[in-house]
Length: 251
Image 1 (cartoon, rainbow, N blue to C red):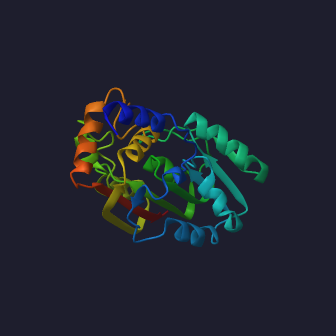
Image 2 (image 1 turned 90 degrees about the vertical axis):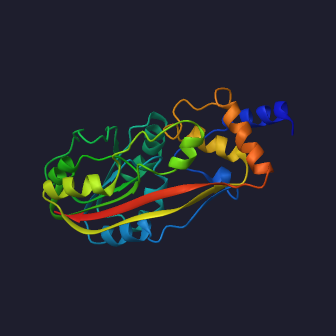
């Protein structure tokens, strides 16, 4: 395709709908190296030991629903991104799950009672260690899988961007959780690879996750996209660094 055709194709990809946290549209075009642990399996193990649970940043509720057969007696969720908040409410309300619109920054408060939850799970959402400790019951567990602040740093560099969350590291949060009164049961930091088969798949990814390259658009970043297209045609791959970690802590 020539420049004009590529531009038109990429703009089509830019406009494709995205909801929840569902990247199935990119099946076969985006490949993530498999994590050496299973967030889902550990979450299920912990659910079976709990009677009350909070899922922080549930997205569209898709992952939580996939674990439904192992839910404890009471399940609550939070989500602050408006499209996902609406979607999660529609999906989870029929099963008795109340979804709260709650910001999840390092210093944000949550509208829950002291010691309200036996289990708090959190997949890729922010959290306030002091609030986690406050709303977690004595003996309760906080289990989180996080995207590292340096995740896809090499992709961001190609667009002249940098991490929006440089402090999102286990080195930052482990001491804060300990200070809040939690005991670290397990933690692991990991690096892997994220690959795209074509630049259009990368466009869809960057539009779906706006904090990777803030303000991303095909029009504004066309020269960067054309540069990557040329690299791809010259035999280079669109492969970048994944960085994630998990923390399991008990009060």
